[in-house]
Amino acid sequence: MQESIQREVVLFTPNKRYTGKIDLKNDGIRTIDQLNSSTIYWKNPAEKSFDDAVLLYDVIVSVHGIDKLTSFKKLQVRLSDIILFTDRLEASGDAAEKQRAQTLSAKAKDELAKAKIITEMRGDSFYFIFGTFHGLFKNKTKQRYFPLTDVKVYEVLRTGSKWDRIEIELGNTFIGLSSNHIESCTLSDYEEAASV
Image 1: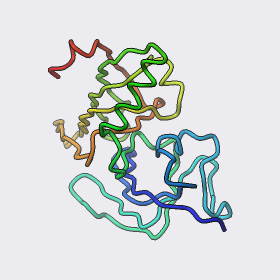
Image 2 (image 1 turned 30 degrees about the vertical axis):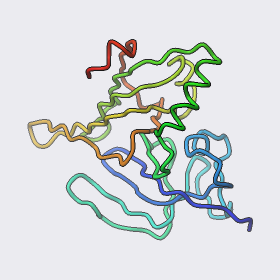
Image 3 (image 1 turned 90 degrees about the vertical axis):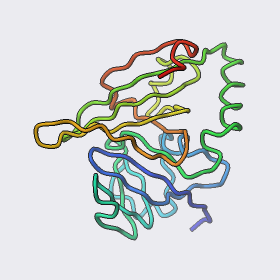
């Protein structure tokens, strides 16, 4: 087996959060590129049970109100169920990543814009997301996951006959958002949306 590195990620699926480590071929690969790849890297492909899954190590499963519902040494999570993710890479959402995005945007003549997004309801919850993206939204949503920076994420949960809105602590200002789980969105120029 070849050597690989691991990176801590947090995967959000309907009503659950998985915190664990994924294998990467090398340290230079961004998490979003790994999860958008047509061939997700597996250190040991013989462990793969699903074609559309990522393998997590040292996993903690959380649900609303319970920080550690259970844990696993290894766990496969299907990509089609991941609504959004963030990683614990310190460069995520920082000035270096923003500079990279701005450089790519300038080359492509893309605009900086704000998005307000509502995900589809799965179970008794959905996500309300505010974020900044660089580029043409239509082009970004052709990918499995697309990047948003300067993000605020709220989970909206039905509890009995009422709804609760809870801000999700991400640990940084970057997420990868699944284009398959967007139910609705609105876009605005960055200056207009600065006071969300």
